[in-house]
Length: 141
Image 1: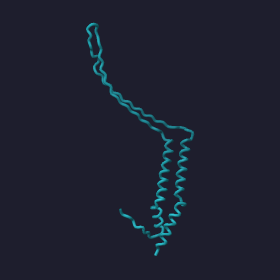
Image 2 (image 1 turned 45 degrees about the vertical axis):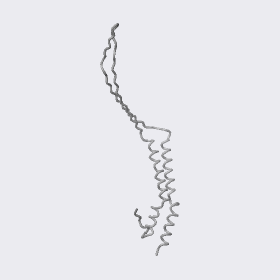
Image 3 (image 1 turned 45 degrees about the horizontal axis):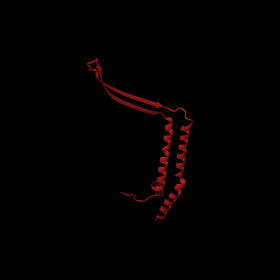
Image 4 (image 1 turned 180 degrees about the vertical axis):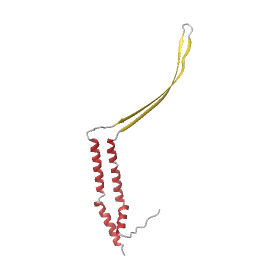
């Protein structure tokens, strides 16, 4: 495992490293990414839904008949029959109106993302960046 040195030439580089490598900020960014996944899920309500079903079958039948009075004779009628079937069904549905549920879900997902992004905003960054700047200034020659 190769570790990069913790040295920075400028205070800007030190702050960038602190911002990129801080585990708390990385966890908050991961939370924003997971919350951001709700937006495409909410938007999927506007898209058509497609269902495909298929079935196939094979049937073998052989019929025998009996004829005659006192002397019964069994006669094969028609011989063996092989029947193959295949069925496919494609169904496409599109919701035209559902009481603004899709719009409300989309707005709610957007609001959740905005809230999560504000959680990563300057309020949580300030102590981390201040600590990085303080450490950088403490180690200046």
